[in-house]
View 1: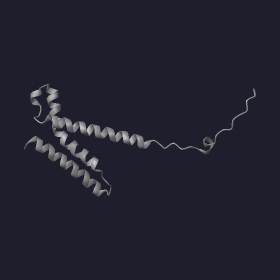
View 2: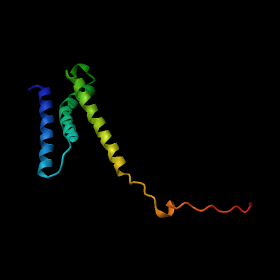
View 3: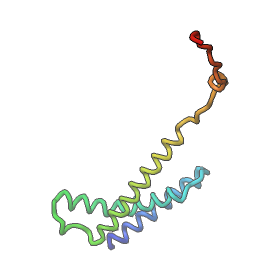
View 4: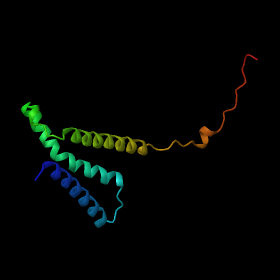
Length: 113
């Protein structure tokens, strides 16, 4: 079996496992997360090949479609980074103004007037 087909199959399998888990738990799933699951499964097999080639310091051992794996890994990394930034901003509590700070203080009279 071709490793490229195995990568696509593992991506589809991981996405199906994620969707079936969400359906079983009666939770909603996002298409973004489905895409991330597919890319993670797709890039896993190629990632192993890339790590082996880097470990042996032999560029001839790189898989033929190594740019696709690097693109998938970059997309997953950027997607996860954006998701973490969004979670961070959602965790901030909205600024509320209390009644004490809402009142404009009265001006004091200057003793020099």
